[in-house]
Image (cartoon, rainbow, N blue to C red):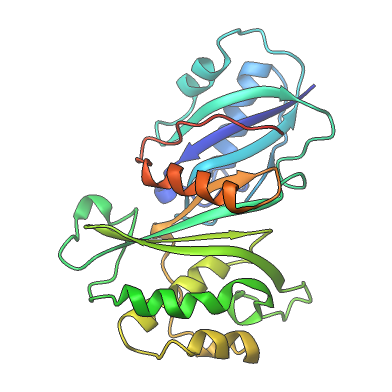
Length: 274
C-alpha cells in the first residue's frame, strides 16, 4: 500500500530534511522513525521538496509504502511519537503510481522578511530580520523579470558547474507587504539548490537600494552568480505547499488565500487530489 502525508515543521533545530547517519537530527529521520513504529516496518520516504538546515515547511508532502497500520488513530499516534516541532496534519492511502516528488506539478515557497522596527528574538529563527527599510514597489517591479522559463544559473548554488540543468519555469511571484512582514511567494515546477534564497537576496538588495532593479534581468541573462551580494538565510524560508494539478490563476488565488490566513500552527487544508 502507498501512503501520502501532509507535514509541517519548524526546521530551526534540524539539519535539513534528508536522513543522515550518526544520529544527526533531521526532519526525515524523525518522521521515518515515528512511521516505522506505527506501521511496524522500515519506512523509506519520498519527499516533495528536500529542505536544507534551518528551512521550515508549512505543507510538505511525503509518500511511502507500508502495510495497513494497526492503529485507526493514525495522525494522533504519529504526533505522539514526533518532536513537537514536527506535525502530521493528514495521512491517506493513495494510488501506487503516486510519488510525492515526481507527481508534483509545482512547489510553492514563501520567504518571510521582518520589517524594520518589528525585530523580535522570538522570530530570529523564523524570519530574516534585514534591519533596513525596503522599497517594496521597486522589488515588485524588478521581480517581474523572473517569471517565465529561464536559465536560473546565477541563482543556483552550483552555478551549473555540476552539470545539472539550471533552467526552470517560474510560474509566478508575489510580494505581499503587511504591517510586520514582507512575504515573497514563488511558484515553480521545481527549484534548484538555494534558488529561492538567492532570488530573495537580490530582491532585498534592490529594496534597500544597493542595486537598481535591472540587476535581476542582468543576472538571468549573464548567469553570473558573483552578482549576488549574499544568500538570504534559511530562517525565513518555508516550503509552503505542493501542487499536484496544473498551476493556473485559480490555483494561485487559492494559495494566496491560504497564505493570508496562515499562522505558524501549520496548514488548515488537507491533501487535495493526488
